[in-house]
Length: 161
Image (cartoon, rainbow, N blue to C red; front, side):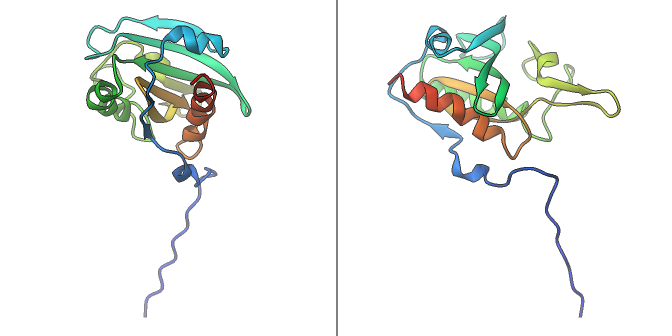
């Protein structure tokens, strides 16, 4: 008889499943509303090539777990954010994220999606994404905790509704 032992680890929180990745909202959010809850813009990207998007912002927000970086992609509606934005968000998030310009579908801001580590090269900055209403939100952190980072911001947006 052969015994197989499976070890799961890597120091990541495994309870990201309690957060939804895609959530509709009756509101169409603007960047100004995010500014009103304390979101700070670092860069605004040219959305040429980001099909359907009307604005894309890189910035940060102070969460309960510290200062976190986000990339926000605004679309005219929730359905457009999902149909045109979700596959591009999946491409640049997670442990297998595409972070090389030559491989990326939308190349604008690609260097901002990398976290450089001196000893082991570049790694993805955004562990996951969430789509809330008309916004695709890329969230900083390891795969296991990044949805929590997304939902810290989403919870603040929900208070605006």
